[in-house]
Length: 504
Image (tube, rainbow, N blue to C red; front, top):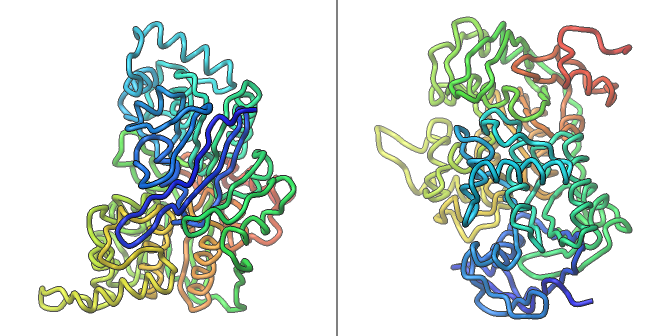
């Protein structure tokens, strides 16, 4: 059988780094092919070349045996390549049909398009109303919009970048059924994910990149997740371990917190109460869009709350903004790393200054101490293995996972009294995720009160002392993580607030 897509010796270099070095691989029609590698291994650059966003410096591509060199995404789509990005590109205020029309070269009349959306969504098990406003959709439904937009163009190759990072287990099952149906119809799928058990369940073959080079391939169903992770990093994978330590006094207390969301499409927080002790990790789970962003914004000081709702070491934090809270020792790392946690066009040195000025003493009398700031940025890069040529590189030049390591490292190294993080290991590889989780456990062992908001239940079960679930802006009573089973967690995630679930 002729390969659908063949890459021969693709090479792409940027100043200070070779992103892809003589990469070759092939994908057959109907094959689900995983592309694995650490953050910064070259996966994103490779798929950008296939999709026409980046031009290779050397090598060639073939589609169905003929030369393939797309000059832009439009040319790639015309050749039968579709791509669903990790970050959705949708307009909240527009309908599903209007968003899909914006991504098409020559959209049909809206009534015709709406009928096609309904037809395709039903055919592939992705039910979606073309008239719904995107801002009202869940994260999983938004992903359906992106997938259906691709499917309407009848792709021969579908590229998916971290497609399950914001999905519930049920939504993952639906997505996998869709991808298997596409595969059975002859559509090839190039699948990027750090969730290795999903790779084992879904993919036929896998190519592993390390440092921009192909270092091996495997059949995922015949290879353990640990073996794949160790192929990716080239060494034995460490498992995070919590040092035995006692918890101390309550550091952070939240009482009857009710706050409206600043976003028209956000989620209001409703009567939330919890307390976190020194040395404790409190895990807060939930599906995206249930108030996670609003909760972090309240705790960081970005979203004001009424007096008495949030206290730190007995001090009311009402009216105290983010910078002042940082000075006190209340630090945070939001989910959106590019644009919220880091300024895209600023250097890593400048981004280190943005949140480290107060606690690291990076300014005095209104003057910025750039040598000291640069040293702080360099320390983050070194201690958290951030793959970048240096601290003067812009934040946007880093891969998503490497920027995540920088953002988390920047906060951890400031030795906070309280650290609140949302999705700390989103989009990072297994080794980096283990390192970040270990850093959070080490912080707690040193006496920091840590709040981890995450959609990754395995992560929360691994590092949390207590677990609570956020559902439609309400928080279940925190419960000891040890002894919780899947059924109990499911009840909590489904909104079983204020009821006893231990013996259900």
